[in-house]
Length: 222
Length: 216
Image 1: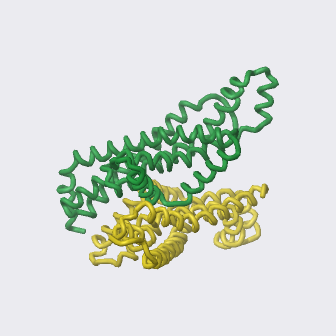
Image 2: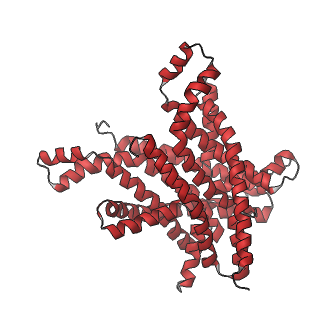
């Protein structure tokens, strides 16, 4: 314990900063595309034709029952086999979007399904148009129900980007392995990146809670 | 470079066996830790609750991969001796499982109405007896679906042990991929094996949940 030496490791602070930025970028891009998959997927899962519903369900089950690391490998190696050259960062974003998308579909679907049918009928009885029913009766309360699970899934995505290091995408975790190979200070490196992740996660939790408190202030009781 | 052969499938079976050993060990030790954490989190004493939440915040804020590396490289630093890789990865996965199971079981304990504690107390049961005979059986039933769901999470998570060179299913796949260059085929097979183990568990968890909600 007495020979801990963080100084050597901290000399690489610029690299760590860059790694963290890449991690955040990767999270942002994957979250965006994952959300798009989630929204369209959820709507199709509720209203779509049967073959599409079966297809979507298999997609969700496959993603939920296989390790993200293996998904990453499969997707990383699928591109060369169809003749596309893709560098690690975009490949990781594709894999993580597909991964996040599966969970997002389930979250959004259950949020939309959580609105009782009687409320939709009540809205129609008040003479609201189809759009108004969707906007005020379904969407607003559904968003409120979706928000907490979606944000915690987002944090899992942030932590999940660390597996991208395994296909040599230079995010935070990969920076850690790089610095470790330069300094041989394994323990210090992993303690430091663990601390960075914890700090980012706690900060995002606080941020999400604040946004949630501001955005869902209107007086709707569950 | 050689082609994919029976040897590789024997290696996969061997790796799968270690995956399962790792899952069972981590689930067992994680379960013990989880029980302690769940009790701490539902304790009437504020410092105990805060202590357990602190551990929770830290472990849930670190990627599993970093947790694994931290213990893999950290245990020799803390203990001053080399530890076998099975021990290091088991410790990391047990702590990961302990924190998640602790949260799941805390939810189960809190879902049992507080009047049940009071009713048990008024029957003259001690605090331990109240928990053991009245609260725990009900809490267990409530948290069983989520516990099975977490087991799937843990099985998927053990694939990361491959990164520190522990030869479980994923690592067996990596070794075969390096020898045959048929990465896509091999990782698809590995994914299919994980799916074959996890999918029945997911289905079971869902049916347990439906039964609990009285819709199944």
